Length: 486
Image 1 (cartoon, rainbow, N blue to C red):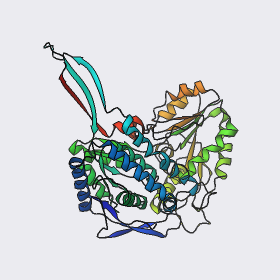
Image 2: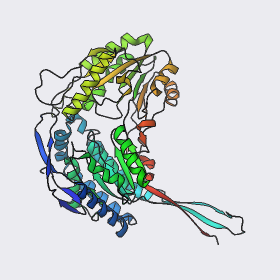
Image 3: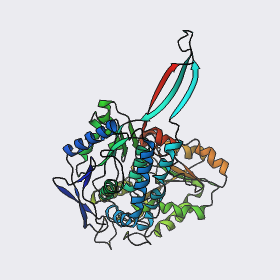
Image 4: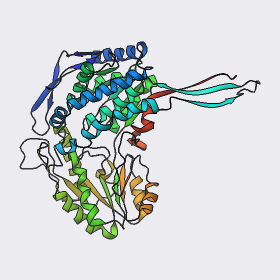
């Protein structure tokens, strides 16, 4: 199927008054064009979502929601390979990654689990009968969960399909309508989802609206409109703060999944030769992942050994053409992002970190926004490259004295999104894990990810959780009711 340039507004696929180009970050060539929405288009989409929420039975018809989500699942599966090619072209993600979190994993699970939960979710619970005011009669009390309403969704560019499904599934399963603004760099996958909804599902007009724009400020309509009940955003902490501030005028809740500067903590009893070369996995998808463990903590007692093992891993990272299955690392999303990453590398050198390998733009590539896999040693946790989210293929190795020191370093960050711990003693690793202030942790290579697993962060890494029961509840309101007990 060709790329879809149109927006989905009020059940109709519509062209904008103008279009913008979508670049392939590996080749710098134009992939396709997308409709370029204005604030007026966004306001029309918001009005459609409000009307659908208030005037259809979407919020109360569980069977309709299940049927529509199954239809969408089937439609997506029918175009899975077209999506794979499209994601590689607009995101620059290596094809290898599309067989995991970029496409195939969310395709299998992100809609099916919320669909199943429509029947299993605790939509109500009873409280004990009570003479609440001491007036001599009993009241029967219940707590109801109801859809929160119209949800404004603002998308990132790094894992756009994964995020759109992990937003859409819970939002729709819980009976809400939504307006989705994809990132300007990667609108094509979202536009495709819009076409599939319009052509292959019974989702009522206005329940899902997808509005792409090259103008980031068009998304502020979702934060400021009184017709929008909630904003769900995945992206940078800086943008998250702006969304929260804009949403405060209408006192709407926000779900924010933001940045990270997560640790990969190697305890002194770990198997270093087996574990440490794998630290180069931060280069996957050019390091453009919020949960990637970009601070490697190793004991000073084995520091030099650790650096050499990690260096071997970095020197073995294959990067380049994302259509080549041998490559783990593709390009940065844009020239702007490449320049931003290079700025951090330069700052790392200027602040005294030791550049072990990488650190430049590949000289043998005349096209694409590539940066070499870059490893820094002798990094102090106060350095910029240890404190700020780089979002590139850059790893900082930091030494520590003992477990207490390692925990202190791990927590000495404004972020708290993810992390990993490796130890020869599982109980020891669990004890350390309980002391680290972060929303997710992998222990000894364990993976926490899944549609049933809450994902989100402490501190500046966000507010709320995506996925899991918590990720369903966040898209509901709570109502407590009481009536005379018989």
